[in-house]
Length: 106
Length: 159
Image (cartoon, each protein chain N blue to C red):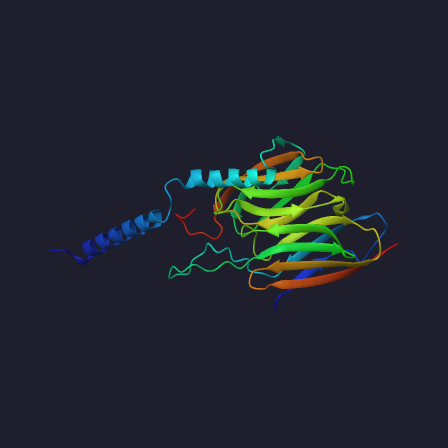
């Protein structure tokens, strides 16, 4: 159900800057919309995205209702060592998704 | 005697007046001023009252947006991104949304490039602002005017 996609190179040269693109499947319900009967649809958003490289945090984003549905976040990092890059999305109603990708650095 | 046609015209008129007043009733008359104050408050919370310079930040948005529900946005900051001189945070705000906040990204020297791309929601034609906080404690910003033809999330009259 909760799905996320990460796009990044599987291998890189040491010191190379790599582009990471992430996409999480989530409606990002703002909490400002109403149903046809006028009742407010409760807020349901991803509040935080954290990226860690071999356990060290390299990038973090706080998200608000003004982020589009299925939030796309693209950023860059420098390939320092082989290992895993972990991505975590945390949101309302206990939403937590973790995705990992391994990278080989030569 | 009222004909069927006259009755329909009157009924439609009455219905549209009721709809218009009820939509207006939910809006604060000072909505624009309230939104502006909320934006200033949000910016002040980020900067702590420090002066914000223009430049060094490049905010890219399409000038005309068909659909405010997913507007591509990218922010790039001129910075070498070394341990001594890097961008610590990038904050994005909108002027006309119910809340001014869009996102706050926290970067470090390992982020390698002070650049990020995402998609945001914009409720109405207005200004989008990006503020970057550098490691030396200075703040830099860039703004972009966006024209939105289809608003995100909100019904007409509630923007």
